[in-house]
Amino acid sequence: MFLEDYWMDGENLQQRWYREFKLALIQKDAKEIAMLIERMPEKFDSLEMMQESAYLLKSAISFIEDLRDETQLSMQKIKKNIEFIESHDDAKVHRRLDITS
Image (tube, rainbow, N blue to C red; front, side, top):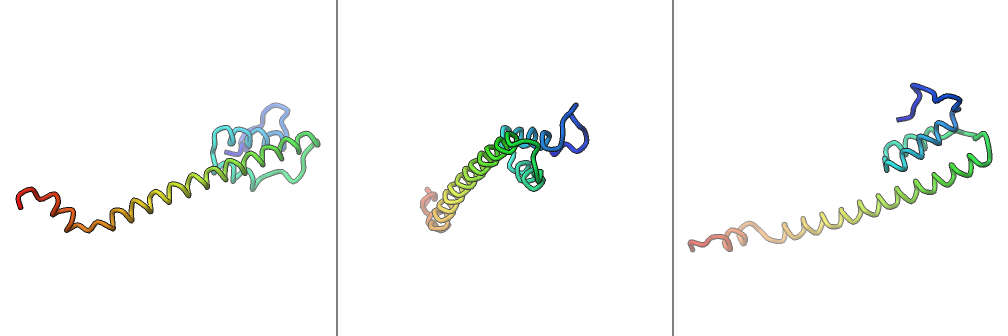
């Protein structure tokens, strides 16, 4: 959650954004990361803050790419399971399980 509701003592917008973005990365909160990227400050107070923010953005890209890869792998597994289930029609399954015939 972008903390518009309160200010930390002496904290400006860039510092607050940086802190929140860092926290979202630590928590691996993709929704919060996306929201904070949309609200990224247009300028930073110092070159150091800009460089640190660039590093965090690179980390966010890496995290999102990992999520994408994990999701793709899960989708492939689900599709294989569906294909397996659909390849065995109900009649074959019932005949094999019918111990009275």
